[in-house]
Image 1 (tube, rainbow, N blue to C red):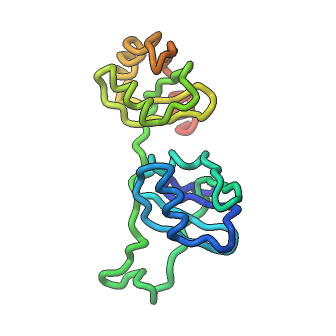
Image 2: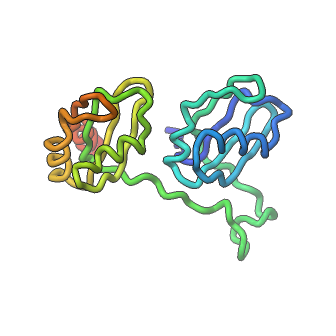
Length: 192
């Protein structure tokens, strides 16, 4: 199975005259995340963010850029390595491209939230879920579906969150919160 990056995005349908500065400027207007790298090829390219959550916020973008509709999705496959002579590999002081980005921490203690406004971001959802007074370790929204997921550290926190947040109001809508047992079932099926 091909690994999918959580910080590096593939940009398709790029105009051949696009510059790095134009790409950085365009994506800076679509979020506040720190861009660590932009690579452009003929008709496509890659943009990398420091934080995985910032990358997630621009993935379904598909915005207009210089008169064309961009394709934006998470990059697949291993990140290309530069040859030894380019400051990488085992050279002292080199290897900046060898850095590893922290992956979002995930747990099986997942709550499904339905009835969300379509424009809800992962950060909005995380802020809502914190109203239960608990630490949220992960959150995501399914764009234009009114659905999102929040993960907690343990089963007790998940249960408390469901009890406190189910039937609550979020941006003028009443939301339903349930413990997602499919996350637990998936974990067991992978182990056995």
